[in-house]
Length: 345
Ligand SMILES: *Cc1c(COP(=O)(O)O)cnc(C)c1O
Image (tube, rainbow, N blue to C red; front, side, top):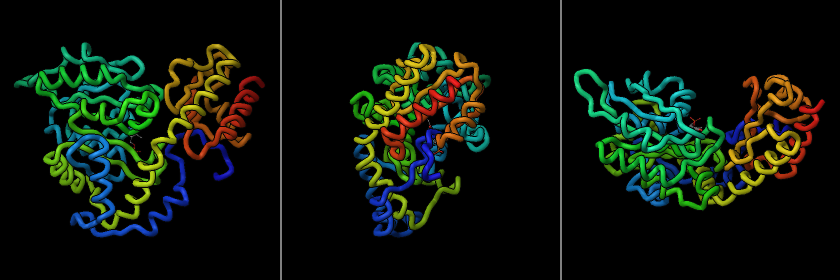
């Protein structure tokens, strides 16, 4: 698929030559024994970057969410989250299957739940009600189209949660996109959370890996849950080395993805006023509304594929387009041209 322009997701990037070199040269050890110096250094680096005491390297963001929620809850507890939360819809029902949790979804606006919405839901638990153990928020919000979670609202949620003895989890799979879009350091959102996870394998461009960050005590508990889930990895410094490159070099670069998404969005909005809501394009995702064109996602997806552009065409009346390191500005302009042809033919 190397010659195709792949707008399906920012997970499709391939490791750069620099990552591959770092992987080849990585010092390794058995990380289950705590012996992998490359992993240990990455965990320390990530924790300090996010302003947390400690961190734990995990294979995926889905495992990161489970590890964090596992640390903060007991079976039968309740998690308040936005209705479109990634861990509710795209992680195989893991919080129910593996952690025995009840979700209390709240319909947000653009992926954002407010402290005012959340406050009346928090409950201590008794013989009847589940205990609310966690409020979770997602930044940037995937199914809302890469929307940034406003830092003031995150602070308000943290305040109300703390007052009610409820923990806060941040699903920050794309947290650094929020930093790139706003200039607010990722650590500011991290400060609103007890646990957080972010992905190296999305816009940052690493082939594999996510990080969990929290207090030192929570990370001790997190290691045990990671092992229980089958995520204890051995000479995993080879992967951590690529993740290190991604974290050191990938953050600055995210602004390019956002600028490319902007080019796509503006080109499509020019084609039809209702094609894209320009205000909703804050990071590296564009949701294209297909209704004005009387075409379905699968139809458009197929026609684009014939023109060398890959998209996820599963949705009937909209289409998600994601920019990332492996699509250049020229690629985006070519994809836009193909989109305009397909939508107007
Ligand atoms: C991608 C993503 C995850 C984790 O996905 P994995 O594929 O398991 O790494 C978690 N949350 C959000 C918001 C995501 O976009």
